[in-house]
Image (cartoon, rainbow, N blue to C red; front, side):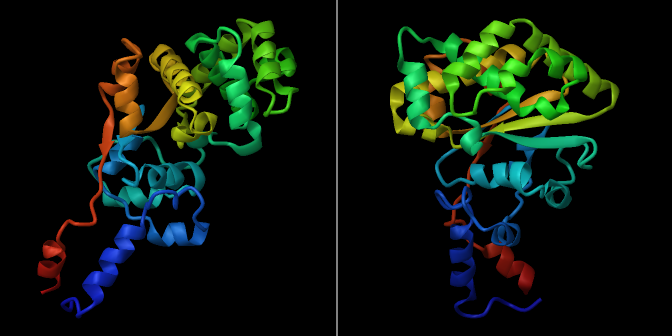
Length: 281
């Protein structure tokens, strides 16, 4: 290999800065994303089946990881750079990666979230029901005929109508839990996995802290309750470090349950390229 030429070092550093820059990963062109995604072995631990919570500063690459798995199906290629990382089967027929948030018009907009979570005496329990209901809606194509026959009321409302969706959730009752229990059992029998991912949690409620806090509390509490119940239906929650710290004290035992085996994502464009220079000599 040849030594880096004058100017190439700066050009490479700038390219690395652009990868995962704040706000870029969420809207990046698919072709550019595939060209610029840089798999870091330590970061790919986020996709180990036992990891639910992925924490990192703004711009550290969380949304890059989310996009690589949930949007662009890059894990089979990226896994070659992390041979020692335990990952689920990467064949599409055996493992599905689904974005659960953000999902556009299939979920309430920020104003809808505020109206639902801030009205009356809403609690974290109401937020848990919200996430539970929308998870079942997301998984509708995977449910068995019994579930599709007994849960039509949940699938009828438009995604933006949180009140109607949660009312349907409450009306259906235990059938929702049983439907996901059967799905998880079927996944186990077929040796399959489904991972659902949550990213951009700082946009919940249009940056309204009350709405955001209630929504995040509900999401964490929901998965803290069910992460050990379901063996092949799992979650990946990508959370900014400041939100993690802000919610650590307010979620009692729920967040530590998920945080015990979390992955910390960090990235710096100031790391010297000494190793690269030496390798090129």
